Image (cartoon, rainbow, N blue to C red; front, side, top):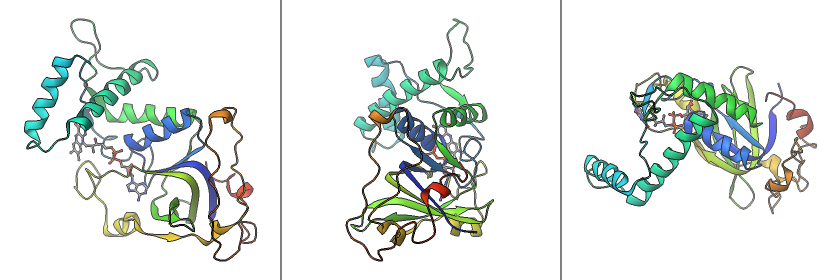
Length: 263
Ligand SMILES: Cc1cc2nc3c(=O)[nH]c(=O)nc-3n(C[C@H](O)[C@H](O)[C@H](O)COP(=O)(O)OP(=O)(O)OC[C@H]3O[C@@H](n4cnc5c(N)ncnc54)[C@H](O)[C@@H]3O)c2cc1C
């Protein structure tokens, strides 16, 4: 089977909540987005199988101060207050968005108000997958990323991996690459996130390599012409140097054909 070559504005590696939110927000901002998970976006990662406590604190200065002070102690006073404030802001916004836009069924307290301090992973990630798909993101499930790819200047310009269910290598050329492959659970043997040595080899990123196919001086444009195009970032520029002079077409791969593939 031939390799699959795709082009996007943003490529997201991973399929947990971080990847799902990154893909969703990039798509909502008008970008053409591809996300690839080694498992299945919606059921893989530590959150999807678990109940998750969330740092949901009202934006009241005293409540926020108390929340940050408590975590500082727990973290041995290594935590950064700027980051904590950012996490508190983002968590508050995201939980409210889940309640309103995604209609997540938060439990209701005795005072009749929703309790937004926790999420049931399966329901949460099921809704995130729906939202990601509805935003037009192309999802590559069961497609571990194995390499980052760089352009002629050495800048990260995409990623490569393998579509396990199709036994097919793939590459995505993208203007921005987001790595959201977790970290908390990797090899922790918790929540089904343990991996076999065979899978580990497949999922440990190797050093970035240059992608010869991307040295095309005339990259094929992205598949979709989105109605949101005024806000879309431009298609990534071609690398400035050419190692082989080969183009996608010269290598027998046209983005038109390949982008009709899986997503
Ligand atoms: C036991 C336990 C309890 C926890 N409890 C909480 C809690 O209560 N509250 C809380 O906020 N956090 C908790 N965490 C932390 C939790 O893991 C994170 O908050 C959350 O899951 C991080 O989301 P993520 O998207 O960054 O990573 P993950 O949810 O781990 O998702 C990573 C994703 O990347 C994919 N991936 C990995 N490698 C590759 C690759 N090479 N190519 C493609 N895809 C890849 C995986 O398949 C997975 O879908 C807990 C963690 C553990 C282990």
